[in-house]
Length: 387
Ligand SMILES: O=c1[nH]cnc2c1ncn2[C@H]1C[C@H](O)[C@@H](CO)O1
Ligand SMILES: [Zn+2]
Image 1 (cartoon, helix red, strand yellow):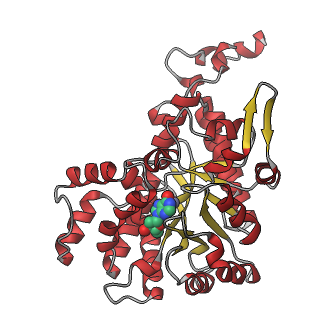
Image 2 (cartoon, protein in one colour):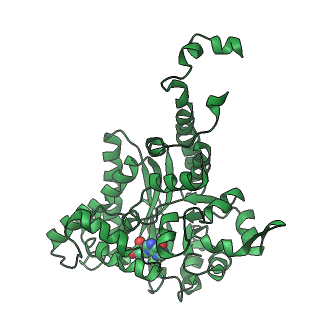
Image 3 (spheres, helix red, strand yellow):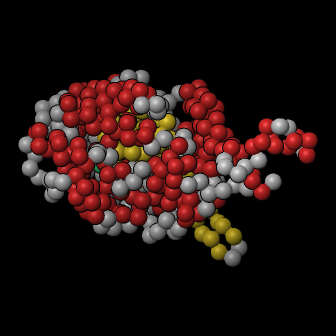
């Protein structure tokens, strides 16, 4: 029986495991080489480095400041090279290819259309270019032997005043590649209630939205996002830990933490990003460990693959190392994410039953066929005789 003892998944196994990503920014995931190419083509001269490797390092280091505001400054450069139709198509197609190559089978990728208008595109043209890129990337992934499906989330910037317009845009492109709405940007000083009109509108339209909350600001932000705005999911939500006490008597959940767990509110957790912005101090101390043990609806995400130098596989590898997670844990996070996606219920269910569960079952069965395993005796039926 020792062969069925859960073992820790390693690099290649983590990559091949089907993964679901709900929180990934399009303008936070460009390939450094693509940034350099587009900057050259479009005459953008503001890049801090023009060698792709050096530029990749620059993003990771600049984002490693311990402050969300400083972290966000790095997006000036990525947004600067995402101002034309061709650039948006290319970046979106490569995003789909990169995620598929990393074993992501379903992703919701977000971006703020209002940040891509400087080259004269309209909001609609931005959305259509990104959608075209995602479809192209899905086709290329298929041709390369992978498979991925991507839905877009339209983000409004919380310091700006275009959330109603972006919410209407999300509604117009619903069922046309856009699956929901989000607000992002600096959290302190910009509470989600500033955008109540947009959230009320989306609720009236029976549409879906998530809100970045509980990252750089604490419980009041989470409380507003849920109880005033009606968010379906929380972007990050790590500060919910402030409403949980662990002492000699056990674990005590405050009213807000209880609500989040009881209502199965999905938490889009992004461990590496949280370390960079100071929302958590190490992987081992990241609240995801406790929240998973307490059965919150936790999901694992990348946030910004470029700025964090990460991928879904990297995030899981860190968690495996910090918490000893097994393939069963990975499946649990992945099913949580799929249950929390904004696509229709029947499609989510089919993804879970036809893609995710069989994918993990196949990986879990691999020990049977590994070198030195008991394959001959299983094949000859002796295992059955013994049993
Ligand atoms: O983790 C984040 N918190 C708040 N805002 C963020 C985060 N990551 C990216 N953003 C911002 C910067 C991007 O330009 C914008 C849209 O993707 O969203
Ligand atoms: Zn984010």
